[in-house]
Image (tube, rainbow, N blue to C red; front, side, top):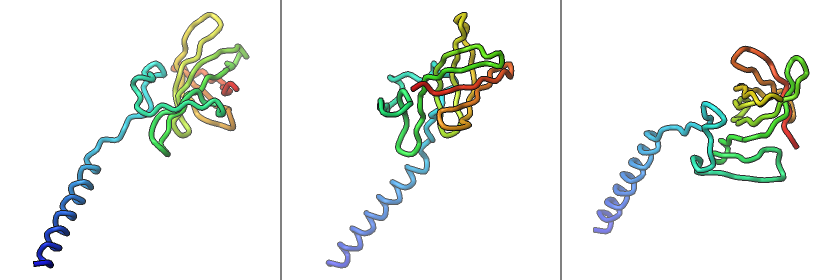
Length: 133
């Protein structure tokens, strides 16, 4: 009788474990990088973290899989100054720059150094970006 109860408990535990593993396999991966910087809002993110000791404005995501938000200063090929905001996940990201006339420019970004990024707009123009302190 004792062995039968142990067998049934083990069988139930194995079925629960199998079902839990199967559920995790079917879960869809979370899309962390929005199509544009405006698509990311604080209300639309479940894990929002702010920390003034780091250069990012805030980060979102789960442990080890974060997306960071930065305010940046940029220069174009003519050395014109621009400002903007970008979202970065890993080495790549996207965001918007605003020129002195108030025009918005969508860019994609890539880290090239500490607090330094390269941005490219839809027309292929390159921008040097630096994360604001």
